[in-house]
Length: 441
Image (tube, rainbow, N blue to C red; front, top):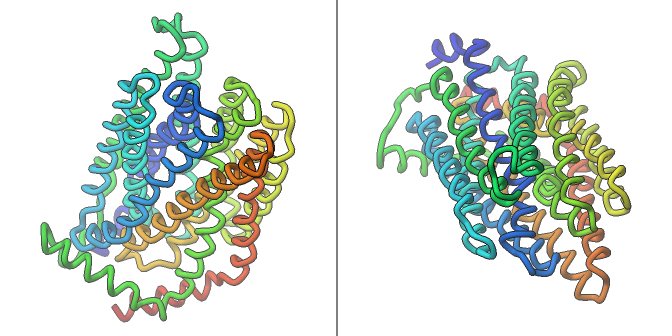
């Protein structure tokens, strides 16, 4: 196993093959999660519903998808580790995401329950696949290049997702050019393009990335039983890996804010009166600014350390979440889109590489299962808090506009508390704990 890992780590083909999966599945994150689904859900599938109600429905849908994966992630990761089945699990979740996303094109106007079910399953495919995609980074990247390789994945994701999203926006703005009867038909077709894009660009990771084989790989029921036992044993390792669990608690807080802004920004913009086209342009700005910025953050992680760079991004997000509650015109929304684009990919990429440095490499899928579990529980909490605060303020007699602005302000608390706790995370201590565990396991 060690020889195979050494031969593959640093291989350009393996690194590009791995990073292209981000290019593949980011089409879903951009076109569906952040872009067209919130718009279409509010204006087509939930047509006629109060804006606050449709926001709550969307928030609860995002939370349901996150909850499913959050509960399964560590156990699936442990099973994949023991059965050397990371790529098999990745294929299953990617296929589920592709199929469910494509099926959204079949949902008719007003059928919001069907749209929610398909969206939850598609999102589960997206989130579940990321567990095993993330865990494969330790197989392709040398430790000193983790920041750069992780950032490469996110940067390609922003570029690829942005390119397809741009093409889909063009279709909706000029449906007749592409033979569509109206913008609604173009949006529904865009869900098919996302499925095809995701499927096509997933191929390189299966062809070029070799999965490390466990010293005693198991299959079938034996892998499941061994994985469950490994999952239980991991909790006993907490005395040796306190830094891992402290970082996960911190990550849970600040990534909550990041994910909630990604998932709910378009819906929030509509709720305070911005035009759909303005919001689409803002998303495109974020994507294309995010491409070079993620790479820059990767190199910043090498120069000043991932920890300091993450701190910088948290401070920027505190500013964004507070300013967002007071903005009045689309120019401010565009400026915020640029600012978010500067830090969004960076905080995601460096969080992944920081974590990869302090976990046992032979249990990467399980530990990234915990990582994704924590992140997705954050995605469960954030939209609920945002939707709940909005409903609470609305029920107190305030306008929908005021309620929406109050809801976005609540997200700043996650960044503030997360940033304060991050002061106590010691990377060098984490590496020592990791080395001790690997030596004695």
